[in-house]
Amino acid sequence: MKNIVILISGRGSNMQAVVKAQIPNARIAAVLSNNETAAGLAWAAQRNIATDSLSHKNFDSRLAFDEAMMRKIDAYQPDLVVLAGFMRILTPEFCRHYEGRLINIHPSLLPAFTGLHTHRRAIDAGCRIAGCTVHFVTPELDCGPIIAQGAVPVSDHDTADTLAARVLEAEHLILPQAVADFVGGRLKISGSRVIRNTGAQLDARLLA
Ligand code: GRF
Image (cartoon, rainbow, N blue to C red; front, side):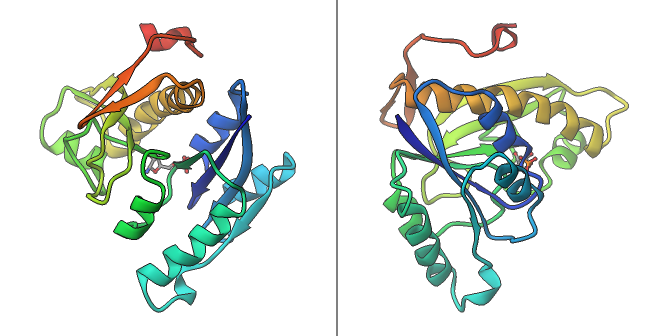
């Protein structure tokens, strides 16, 4: 069994997708948040998953918060830490501590549109295709080796909200698949690239 710790800041729909996927040999050891009112915490607690929160507002520095968060995370001896809508910029110390076992879901087709407001920016740029990316986390924001991507069309009538909803459906497919591939030992980092050995596909829509 591999221990997974999932970090969220809000609704936690990506975390829910990972939990619901019931990934073989994966145990969701804890769901942690920087926001004690994150809706996803209540959802996880109802399913008897350990939950905890730590407000970044109670810390003087980014590093002090990250160190305290690392202590909480490490208590669960994670094989993998998943950032699933965890809206914090992480220190290099945090990234290095979990190097090779820290992944993030980002709502754009990286390397396009790192950072915030990705859907608005994709529409404003006239993109015809948008999407999401799961990547290993490195100290440079949204720049680590790419594990998986999901693409969706952008329609002329899209608003940032309608595009976000379409991209979110793709997020819910690729994040559980990436976690399953990690747990199944199917991901290998080679320089800046991730090589994925073919293996179990969680959802046939990923092949479409
Ligand atoms: C997702 O779109 C994720 O990619 C972004 O924030 C959103 C979080 O949604 N970073 P949820 O909390 O997983 O529902």
